[in-house]
Length: 95
Image (cartoon, rainbow, N blue to C red):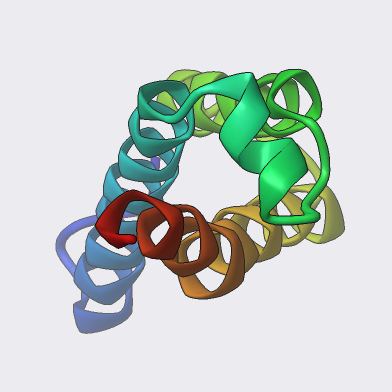
């Protein structure tokens, strides 16, 4: 955990908390849609997304000190899911 006594430490703590929230939210959202919806939207499979997002959420919560590029890759996966996949899946429900 970063040193909270410094301003940089506080910012890093807030960023880490935001990554945890985004990762968990993306993982939970990936579970709410059916596997058929992923196929109909032409996206990667539900199993693939839930494994990647679940692993990313678990590792961000545990905070085992992964190399920054691995943590960044999981964050990017969560953001791609929220920005691209989730709207496509939600669009299928509205029709």
